[in-house]
Length: 565
Image (cartoon, rainbow, N blue to C red; front, side):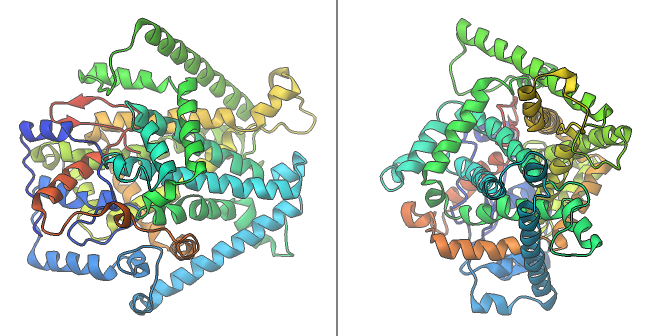
C-alpha cells in the first residue's frame, strides 16, 4: 500500500493534535512485521512522507523484501511475524555470521549468570559481603528486582499501546488488564504513571547494582583474573543480565500480547506504585522545568482535567518545594561522598575524575533521552524547517530511511542507557570506608538509607532523564542539528550490531512457549487490509504516540509535543 499522504497544513496538525496520542501496536498495518517497537515502526512511512523523501523503485522493493524476509538479524526469529517464536524455515534464513552472534550472545549471557550467582553465594558482593545479607535472600531479591523491572518496562508499552482501544472489548476477558487501564487512562493519570514508573525503573537499577556489585578483587570458580575483571569488576555480567532479562525479553513478547501480559496482579501493583510515587511529590520539581519551557516558548500546557482548585494548587506547590529540597539534599549527599571518596565507585578512580565522569555521563544519557524525542518530533515540523538544517536532515535519514536502523537504534540506545545508569549508580551510591564513621555524623539508620542509592536514583531521574526530555520536546532541532547526536546514533547502531544482546530473542522464544500468550487480535480483532482510512488514522496516531509524555508537555498550533516514554 502506498503511504498515506500527510498534509502539513496547520489544519491537519490541529486535527492530529485532537486525536488520541497513541495507537495500539497490536493492529496490523499492510502486513508489516512487528517487533517490540512496532508502534514506532508504523510511523516510519509517516515521517518519510512528511520529510518529502522520495524513494527509488529499488529502495521500495528492497524495503518490502526486508520487512518480509529479515535483513535485520532479529527478523529471523519470527514465525508468522511473531517475535519470540521460531520455526525451522525461519532458522534456515539465518546467515552464518548472524547465527554465530546469537550463539555467542547466549553463551556470554549464561556465563554471566553463573559468574554473578557464584559471586553472590561466595559473599563477594556488596550486599552479601559487606551488608551481611543472606546469600539466598540476595539471590532471590536480585532476580525479583529484574522481574519487577521487566514488568515495568513492558507494562509501560502496553499501557500506552492500549490507550486508544475501547476498554469494553476486553473488560470481561481480561479483568486485571481492565483494572489497570481504567485507572491509568483516567484524566492525566497516564502521564503521572510514566513519571512514577521512571523513578521506579531507575530505583531498580540502583538496587540491583547494590545487590550484586562485587567487592575488592573478587574471584570465583577459579577463573583467571582477566575473566573476573571483565565480567565482575567491570560490571559487565550484571549489566548484560539486566538488559536481557530486566528489559528486552518481556518487551519482545508483550508487544503482541498486551492484554495477556497485563492481566495479572503484578501489573495492578505496578500501576498503583507508579501513581503513588508521582503523588508523593518527590519528582514534582521536574514540573518547574516544564513550566519554564512553557513560559519561554509561549506554549500552553495541555491537560485532560479541569483547572486545579485553590487547595489543589497549594498542594501542588508544596510538593514542588519538597521535591526541590530533596533534590538539593541528594546533590549535597552525592557530591560530599564523592569528594570524600566514600561511594561504590571503583577505588582506583580519583574523586575529581569521578565527578567529571558523573557530569559527562549525565550529559551523555540526557542527549540519548532527548534524541529519541527529537527524532520523532520532526513529524510536527514543516519539512523546510528540517531541510534547512543539513545535520538534522542527515540524522533523520540515518535512523528512518535505512531498514532496520530505527529498531537497532532503539535497542542500542537501551543498552547504552542501562550501562550509563549502572555507572552513575556506582558513582552516586554512598558507601563509607571502614573507620570513616557516618556521612555528616548522621544516625546509622539514616546512613543505611543513604547507602541504598535512593537519593542517587531520584537525582538521576530528574537531572539525567525527565529534564532532558522536556528540553528536547521544546527544542528538537537543537538536539538533531548537533554533531554529538550523529555520534550517539552511530554508536548505538554499532553497540546493537555487535549482537551482545541477541540472546534476548532466544529467551523470548522460550518465554513465549512457557506462558503461551495469545496475540491481541484473538480477543479484539485487527484492522482489515485495504482500509485506507483506518491505516492513515493509525499512522497519524502512532506518529503522535512517539511523543507520549513522561509528564504533560507543551502544545503548539502545529501539534502536540509530548515527552517520549
